[in-house]
Image 1 (cartoon, rainbow, N blue to C red):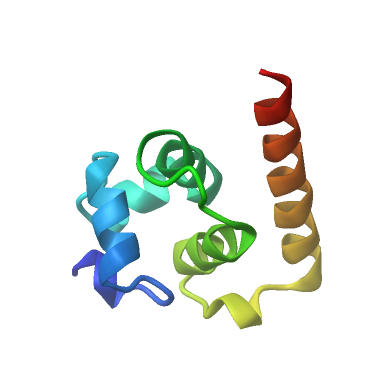
Image 2 (cartoon, helix red, strand yellow):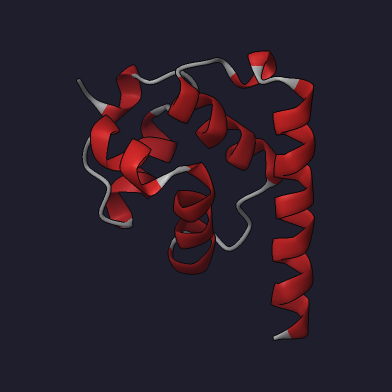
Length: 90
């Protein structure tokens, strides 16, 4: 299975994952969506947004990002806002 076989993971996001050392869906799931997002934001794409975080979270669960439960979407939004706040403070 390739990274692009996961929901929400197209060629660009797959390449970003490879740039942070994630080569397989299994390695991605081990790392988790939030950690992958942080590494992409720090090393590859400083403009990585909430939509990308949602795409990663959906991929981790095997779901289109639109199918994420509302509680998960709210947690991702809070995580993203906290990440931005920490970046501003540093």
